[in-house]
Length: 152
Image (tube, rainbow, N blue to C red):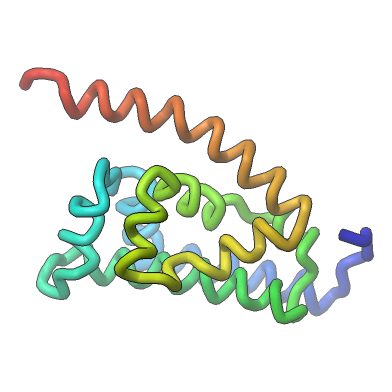
């Protein structure tokens, strides 16, 4: 990726994206997605996202579509990739969080997090950020699995 200075318009978009993340329902949805939702299998994943009656289904859709929209803005040149990657890690965290079941998810939902994946594949800085998040997440996932499997 050729290094280019971000424009004031890029900065405005990144700040607007940040502002949208602070909306109360979005904060609640993000807290659930990043902290509480740890599916071990694709079946665990689809139990939530395939059930519109599940109260977390809307949280899931809100967070994933937000980050996919943000990634699409970068991919279509609406915002500097370098500035976006420097300012955001959560989309990469979510892709990494589902990496262990991503192939199975995409068998049923081929476009799941496809824009975030494309961002990682297209921009070196995004790939580096993703790899760092993925490594950190693996140890966290192992800790969560130990807690989940401990007798009550």
